[in-house]
Length: 500
Ligand SMILES: *Cc1c(COP(=O)(O)O)cnc(C)c1O
Ligand SMILES: [Zn+2]
Image (cartoon, rainbow, N blue to C red; front, side, top):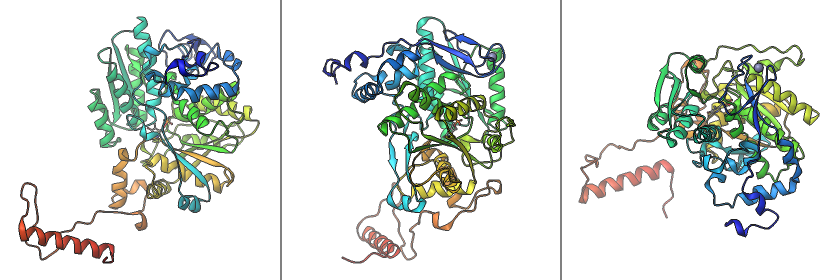
């Protein structure tokens, strides 16, 4: 829709006013730093940072209803910069001019309600939000859109030049980083570090296809992270891991979209997310908190973080109910099908601790929960969901397993509606499905395939046909008729079809 056609009371707000005054704040010592420099950790104490807006309170001048209308009308805008996560510009990068914003089709991912059969089976109403439908196939595109828009802004301002964007990854971060960096060629080049043999072949193909320099490092993600941190301390590189607080801002859009999709009524909603490096759950908490503070949502939804038994440091931290006695201890991870969350020392743990406190305090009761699930349940629930019309990745399966666990623990009831994060596209993790269907899981995964969930192709090459078509060698005449006839008979027998 053209700008002049928006109603008078909304038109002045459609284009963002760029009034944000952002700064980094250290979660350790509280010091504040200008955003003119790309910082990842506090130069003083080394803790992680979050980005705040000195003008945040001015957003409260507009009523919640007007914000609702504005976001609804922005869906109709024909300006690419505002079509993705920056529909919520005032909450993500309120100083970024539209020319600096990168839009590659991220955000606006669909929420798909579970069918009757799944609702009966689980005794719950739930949705999958398909973040695998982002351009590089995972939610990481949300954070890369904000981080690379910010880097683009610094380049245009002349604060930065010849950027080498670098990250360590369990697969999806590097796919997203390489994609967004590739769009800014030649001003930005990218390099990614991946744990050798710990990403799927699809995930490996992505940064390669985007032209990034790809390094495979022995060990697991936590080892890659150490290397990339040491690099960023000594050399002039732009770190794109979720240590980078700009990633968190973009990922907050996930919460904003859920709020909008439920017409801002979240009292009886639960948002379920897997936890790996804990950037995502931090962003989800922060996003809902911001909308709540401005009066856009009257209630904070429940948030349920889920971890596998094989990578559960956050779960263990919260096992201690007395918060004064909690102590974070990194763990050694074991193989997990929720591979993108196979992290023993989450970078965003200080953010989780800070925001979980703030979230529960603001809500006046416990609204953030962390549950743990088995590898078996992750796979079984993923496969079952996909047999009912979803395109869930293992992390989406982890969310559904976590939802069932939460129901058992009394965290969730029939009254709640849950949104499960299918953080990536099922296709990225097709290899785990293969292992399940062919009973090829290495023992360490502790997964025993349920025959009822298995599925393998049926090769039709029946006895008694002497000729089969081959590529470049088609059959003709009687040979071809005999072949078709025989195939029809075999398929009809297999499917027990009735003659018409
Ligand atoms: C990164 C990632 C996660 C984990 O998210 P964190 O922000 O690291 O907690 C989960 N699922 C997928 C598909 C991912 O790419
Ligand atoms: Zn500090």
